[in-house]
Image 1 (cartoon, rainbow over the protein chains, first blue to last red):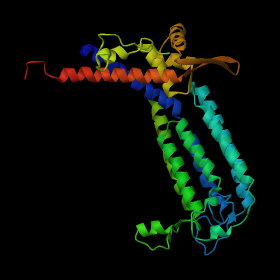
Image 2 (image 1 turned 180 degrees about the vertical axis):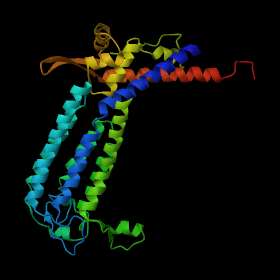
Image 3 (image 1 turned 120 degrees about the horizontal axis):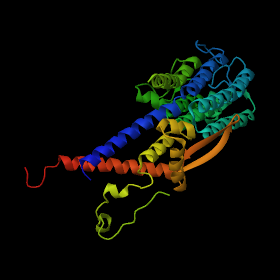
Image 4 (image 1 turned 45 degrees about the vertical axis):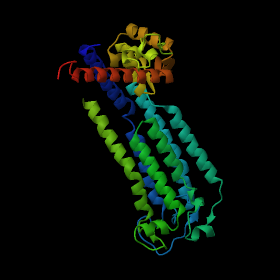
Length: 246
Length: 127
């Protein structure tokens, strides 16, 4: 092997890398719409809370937290309908989108995991639906946490769907966004009231053993949850448009 | 399955040295068009025959010939279906195909870095 062979091999590698990038843009350039869809669903769920942005002295939260976060809902039935209609509609929209892209670009996205996640989300929600609703259990009113029962929320299946979507679309941003939604949901739903900081965390930040409280409302938290998804959607759409121009 | 080279006496691997990357290159994969096919399919879950043909700038017959070789080696799967009334052929990389491409690219990278390193070393006796 001589320098000519090395040059040839280097040229081959460079050409393959170009081809790989071009195919990646074509195959995964449509991730922005599902990301945007999930973000819109999260943001639309702000309307399910009685006091989405304003502070209130007391809250009357129904359990399970059908709106998503443990706060007072306008109507638990409306919250329930929102997620049970909204989530299938979102997945149906995703399916149509990927089907259209496959016809237009000649490249199929990995349908099976997406469909499996969609069905999985529905099954999980159906399991959640079997749990009777009622007033907050005493254990949740007590400030000692974590309260694992709070994890019965439609936000976690959605977070799982975003993680799987990220794997399918080979997008670290989407995987991170899904994990972010899951972590935020897990924290918010296992502590009560909303935004409660445990004693150990408060101690770490120079507070007391009694813990603390962030004065954010469900609307603020939902915007925080949707933010990484919106960033991924904008970046992906910009890359797709740039690729289309080139 | 990808072609595997057995170690033979006198060859580097028989003497305990790591094999030269050139000996690891797979004859089935180490071909410009077939490398292109595997690269495109590695990024897509499934790709239409016509899309692949246009992307690589080939004729139907030429691409078909290479696809048959790759399919026979178990590196890709071919499935046929319809879009409306139009027949469509979809191609998908197998696990073996993905591994073969990864090995090929790694061997090429190793080859390039070895030759570049050798080019930077001064010849013996020269300071």
